[in-house]
Image (cartoon, rainbow, N blue to C red; front, top):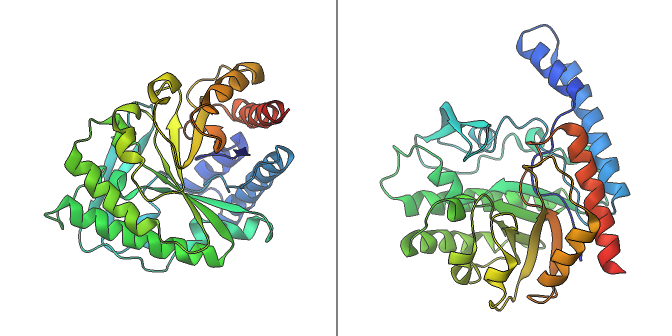
Length: 314
């Protein structure tokens, strides 16, 4: 059983303070960089103590899920703020102004592999191509399928570069597949994209769903070319998927990233024993980003995952 994080980690009060001061031209970029390094070092230590199988950098300098790609991909600019699903957070909506391609720039700015020890198993978390396209204005594309295809190729190019820097796990977030009612044509477009993303040498991939019930489309998701499917167990009941035959790993989103209440290892262990009846290939993780939580609560949720993994192993 593996354990790892699935998204943004909240920033400390100090990093928030320094970042705001920088935005008001009261501090320099060096102060922001040092505060970011301090937060990253603490997060890495938390993951090390928790014995996580893959380590993330927390995406501490990502403004939202999409803005970094205006630097790394061609043809993307940003519009006004849009609510991130049914959460009290927002993102700048991407505007696709020309053909999307991977540029090869900005990589080390948004993936802080320089802060992670060289021999550590690294995980990168990226927006899935269908959710990226679904969340964007698309004036340059008449076809949704063409945009998703180009985004998949651009993401594949980025991931191949990250493999060179020691990344061996790529998670692609696809909440649009489960939050909205997805029809067969849309599922086909998304599945074709994963035919591209499934070809990243020396790497494991995960299609991560959250904010919605995966059960109605799970039979289709199991056909996607990916090693793992992540399911938000606060939106999808295990009983609703127990009759499916899994030939992939199941990433159980068993720690709630949108609720400050702490689960107990005993309750999570019971849940995971139910999951073991579906498949013997299981990972445990939060159901979504932890950035929705207070910093200290997010720290405790990491420890909770570690305690649960140890208890289930026994």
